[in-house]
Amino acid sequence: MSKYSDELSYGFTSSVAPPVRETRIGVCSAFCGSCGRLRKDVRSGCAMLQRRRFDQSGGCQLNLASGIVSSFTNTVMITHSPLGCNSRFAGMSGTRKTMRASKGKINEEFIWLHTNMDEIDVVQGGIEKLRRAILYAQEQYHPDIIVIANGCVPGIIGDDIDSLVSELQETVSARIAPIHCEGFKSRYVASGYDSAYHGVLRCLVGPCSRGDNDDDNADDDVNDGDKGVGVDSAGKRGRRNNSGIVNLFNVGSNSSGDEAELCRVVGALGLKPRFLPLHASLDDLKRIGEAALNVSVCATHDDYLLGHLKERFGTPYIIDTLPIGIKNTNAWLRRIAEHFHLEVEAERVIERENAELNSALAPIKERLKGKSIFVGGGETRILTTAEFFHSLGMRLLGVKAHNVDRFVEDMLGDVTGDDLFIEVAAGMPAEEINLLNKLKPDLYCGHIGANGWVARLGIPCIPLFGQGFNFMGYSGAFELARKADKALRNTNFSRNISRHCALPLSVEWMESDIKDNIKERENA
Image 1 (cartoon, helix red, strand yellow):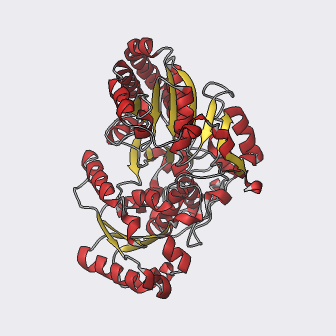
Image 2 (cartoon, one colour; image 1 turned 180 degrees about the vertical axis):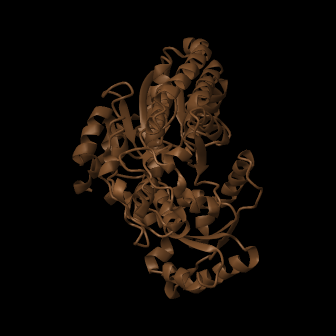
Image 3 (tube, one colour; image 1 turned 90 degrees about the vertical axis):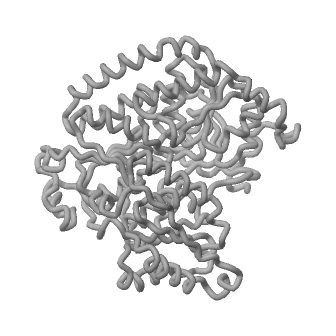
């Protein structure tokens, strides 16, 4: 991955909302061609100019932002919008309860309220409804945190939720965190992660104390609660490094098995890993600046948060790769070890883990060798997952990313070379089905929501991630290979699905070239 993050500034917390990713880091949401061409277009900026003649569907920032902040312990979430914005919360509630139980967290219900804005509120404003909801949440549930997710309608009519929060914070014991996740503001749905973390940084972590991480100013770059955990001068490991605390930043697609595996391999270096911010308590969030090192699991989720924490607390971070597969897990662990000067210990761990894993994978590799695969989902995850399947001897026909930005520009040619086919499309199953119908892979590994469409083509599918499975680290690599092997051993299910469930797409569309649906923005 490039050092692009070193060029970015993150001092945005004086604003009520973060900048969208289109302006902050640049985003490509429409592309069809080779990885080599995409990498050149990303660097030149041309990739950001492409659009589609029509978009089938898309995602919403509110859903991604809600998935993060609703996981916090003893939290009430208020959605300020018309009622439809809560359509996914029943399922989110079940996932939250399951995940907390699997992590050994206390069992608690997911409590959410809704202001249910109607036509009258659109004309007169919905602030009074929101005021009543906040006071009700405090009186009825006594939470540590009250999160307000601002939907599109109050964003358009100009409801000033931040002024209301400032007014009520003096009388409400819970910390109130407004999240500006209006979906209309960005075509890049991952901007929702920035919206969530922006609210967390402004309201739950503590006052911003910008720092440049210079040795002479290290102790000045932390707030009073963190005095004594600064970085020693002359590049030596200070008290932070000696603490051995490593923050591992989890995402909604992490399973408890993933977290246990990554804690295991990091702990094998003698370090003290802890996972956050998902399912963290208010006290956990307040202590987020104590770590010696912040480590990303996925740059798409984490760069805004980790960049801010470096500027505020002087905490260095690693955001280079996602620990999926053997090669990328090795690289991820080596980067952590390098920071603490534990290179020798890391090589011992890597040698042992690789020997055991390669021995276990040997019979699976024989069966997977020569089989073709297509991978679709988030940009970092698909590239690391595709690299792993390629290392098993499978033929990689292509990948499909929801969006692409400069955080993965150096990864685009690392899998099989510049000629690897890549489609960039968020919420365009019709395009992906058209493409897969022509490529006809033996196996599809995809994001939640895509596999049901692909199965109608008769193509066996396995999930790209899942909260009930282990995908990361060395044990995750074995499980991922085993899933692929199992899916290819018996393909009756997908074949039966294709016989009885027709696709709602015309013959003309299926025969068309999906590249014809992409055009330059100036001609839109």
